[in-house]
Image 1 (cartoon, one colour):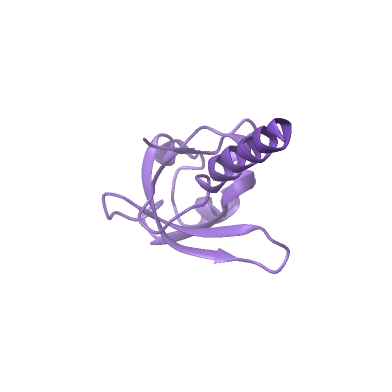
Image 2 (cartoon, rainbow, N blue to C red):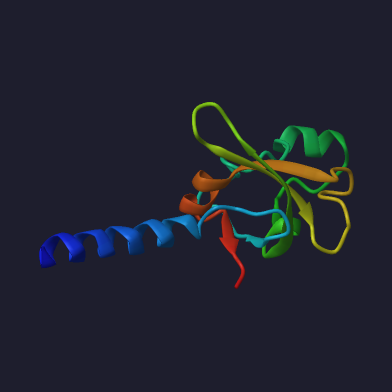
Length: 116
């Protein structure tokens, strides 16, 4: 009986710990430097689009930038998509108000980090 109670208690603790990773509107995140040349899980425009618009081709302007979750969308396959907006209200690369990101994959890849 003690083992069953202990197992249920551990299961409850793990369940509540995993529930804290769900994004909420208003959460503040930081955009980190991607491990590759470009972002894979945040939908920033590709370098050729930035060049055509006259913006610097590197993504340095968004590194360590604070962003706020404006919208949370749960897709049919179970993945969570979030719409991000800059915390200071300026535009990404001078022309994008919002960008979309796959929340779980971006966090796991290190492209986004939760601010505490």
